[in-house]
Length: 276
Image (cartoon, rainbow, N blue to C red; front, side, top):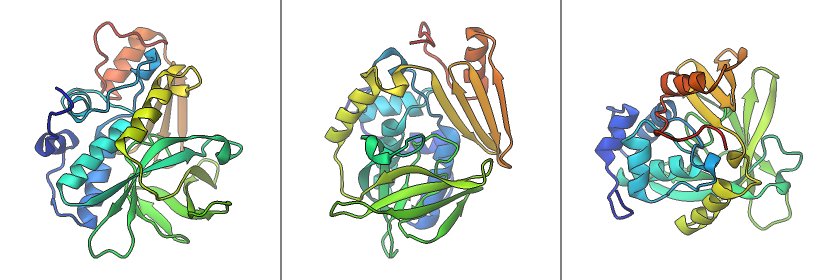
């Protein structure tokens, strides 16, 4: 497939298992967001070999929809944006600084993609993001509203205005960590629009730079109906919806490939190594 290959909404809906309503309304937005999050895993197999994955629409269809593969934030959210726009939603592409694990969010570049979705008749746009991948990721979109706690598919989130010296409001998405019993910042963003060319540049850095975490280790995640799976190198972490955490080291590459196939739903291309 090529860049000129059109997005196929029907194929996408089959991939995420969605057979519900298809109106440009909040219920459809929430349903598609959750279905996508539960169906397509987060993975960095191309970046592990210092290759930036293609963001061409046809290549996204071939990889994430027609194959048993996943991707990282640019791939997921671009694909999701095509589906939303095909259904009549208005979508603004955003760029965020990842706060998770950072001492100061300002020390991080804008390397994460998220979406702002406008629904006709709704007073507030929605933050949507099917590509963050972590256990604190959104499973359903949340209105861009401060001071409200949102519960979506068993996870708790809130949007907090951040103090800063710039002209635009900065929002921080926070997730409630049941294990630690505290709110944890996920990423910070403003709502000015970004263009596909911007993500091509971000994607090249994240997928090829030796400073990128995705070029240094295997990093696979999947949200399931009852929890979350994370594979970092050979360490498999299973987090239940009740906050329980189980970890185990996988024995070797054969077991890693089996776990990717069975538990994550990823068919590793023939001949592709699982080490940098």
